[in-house]
View: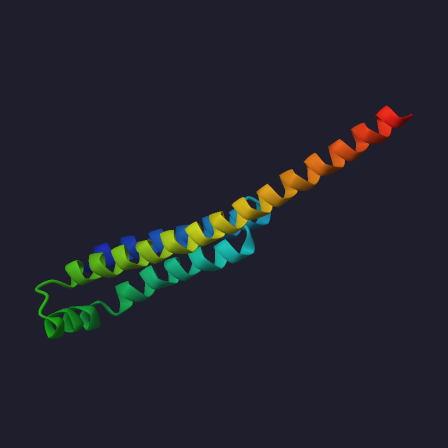
Length: 117
């Protein structure tokens, strides 16, 4: 990777850090997800710095290009992220169902009390 390309990727990582911090300050992004995205930005930053190591790792795995190894790692990471978010969504669906049941019971009790008066 050329020096200009490395600077470009590092610039993108710095902008991503700034955007994440800005979103957290505004309250648009929760802290637990901010840590995840900051980790991704740090990973991008680190990959630029250790590119020769990535190329050697690729060669030792029998992969011709470090870029291919990077894409493989990115795809595996995204699959893990999707799984994590699916678990969170499942948990939230249960909580919403429980809350809807509680609201329905409270509304039924309120209607019953209103009819008795």
